[in-house]
Image 1 (cartoon, rainbow, N blue to C red):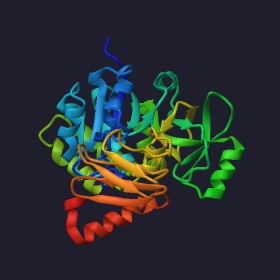
Image 2: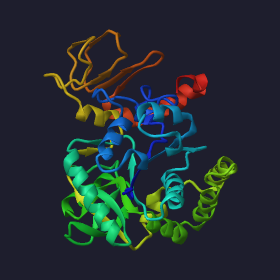
Image 3: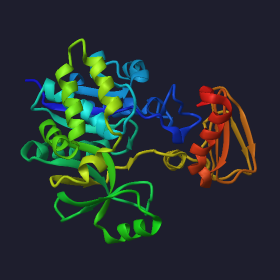
Length: 357
């Protein structure tokens, strides 16, 4: 019997916080930044392939990355890669997948996941996803997976729960707070990090678009009607050029009254920064995260070094630095200043164009 379980992988970002390793031509989701031997998107596919059959995956990505997706996930076919003409944040991305599925299988249950997260305890994670699918099957609910916070982090959105049930109704969403508020959230015990992983019936999310984002509903209903026809590509381009760029959190999750959260602790990280790569990397006795070969350190501590294969680096006297070398760009930056990477990119782009971006 055909499965109604589907997985949508969002793989359209360019991972600019990982520049100069992550580029427009080869963004983060296609890289093996943690040195596991597999790219982030490959890990993501394998994580869900134990729940969802290969033919029930959809990957939403920029049209530039279609061939890369098929190279990293050869189990899927061309029609399973949905190409965005331009990035418009997560609501249009999810709408494109949801309305495509609505046409294919109106009874579909839909898991939505970013392509580039790290999950250390995959068995526990799959059990939680299974519980979410079961709940979504029986209720008209929009589920998100919440993560038990371990520190007052200002880089994540937070979800407040309304009760102590395993699957709890969401009281409110809070976008990235300042450090004081993050400390209050951590102490209260009622707030969880928003992982950006969602589970719902395709009918439920389409109804939510109709109610809370009617302009997106109108545009992507047009896409749904055009799927499989000669007009499909043109209609998709019009939908993305005309729809408002908005996240699914702002557009729907913060407004809907049927949002639930299943909280868990399964070794999750969005690996969003060089700092989080440092945190998850193996370190030497001086707390340096460096390649196994080719790196010679002297009087250097608590630093992360990324080098091209067959490159030698000799580094002396650095404390808490990020050193990233590629074929055409070298970046040396204190770990405490990595929030400036986007500023560095703008400067390089201003003087050299897109060549090194």
